[in-house]
Image (cartoon, rainbow, N blue to C red; front, side, top):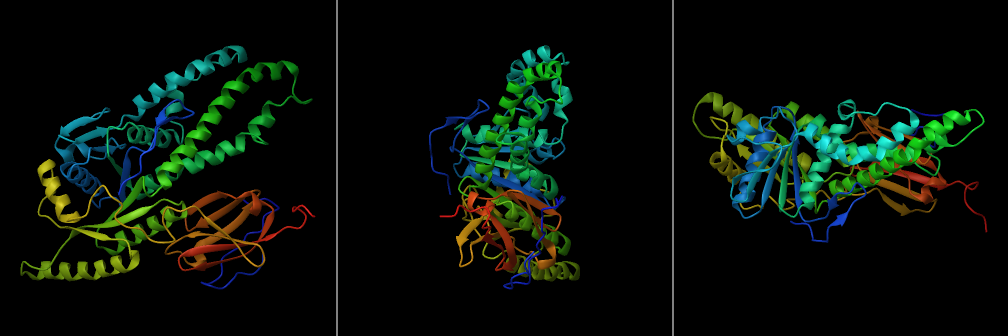
Length: 445
């Protein structure tokens, strides 16, 4: 990962520098670079958590309650094995199906979505394949590539938000690892596009004529340049559009579902750290299957006491975010009536479609850059991280930030590209990186 010019920096202990080394506002829809409409008419709430914690049930209950409280609501799942049909007790398909007035369900068919979008791109490339004497790439060959599923899922979400048909789109995003891969993908896609596009991307260097490449080969593959460049440009614009939607707390919220158990809390803390690292806003935590006092038997009393202790730890860890509680039930809630009752008990008077809370200085923000005596300080939230979890490296115009198993590549602002990293430390759940100007790169008066 590191090249010869990099100097990794590891944050010091908290406060101590390391050594040198409710509702979205409306705006008119617009046409995006991939030819699809995008706007701010709807709001998205995505649910994720440790596998087996009841994420699908909580997402379905939220959507059902929101619809009954007057919000035009779409409940979406991108996982064909997620069990949405069984939870709703109603079949759902690739297109939204009305379940009851104001409530729609959709099990997105990613293969069908890919084929529809590929039909729009294929004419652009067909002529290029013929000139380059290359067999055309078929949809089936591309559909299984890494990142295609995440791109399609997020495009489907964007299209539904921009359609003006729904006030709220509730997404069952699945287990934590799958959800994080989905939510972080726009930034990953943008990174790859930056590597390929101008001013000095690899794609541009590849198509540039050179003495080492024969004129015949250059002519053959040169026909691919314009359409491939066009596709990459569209992808980059689409990635930026998706990233903007996912990181705006007024438009998107992530809600973390957990059970009051040690392992579930540990996974949820890690997920919260990773989401914050990527600037993705969390507005609530939902504790599911909580056993309360009452019933009289020793077994239940023991579990109730254990859950009470766990809930105290959960509330302390995520404060000031609200921690909603969903009581343990003798049977799984199935069907719209039971889901609505389940949701009402968990949310109470809170609006399931609104922004329920925020953690100041952590959630849904772009990295903060401030002037200092020596230069600049860049900071962003990494809750629950410790010094040993964090590693930094400078790679050209990007800062590579690693927190445990999670990594983010931050494109540095123009001013910081002409600086060196001098120190880093953790303070109040934030990673602070100090930059000092490099005299050789600043224009002298």
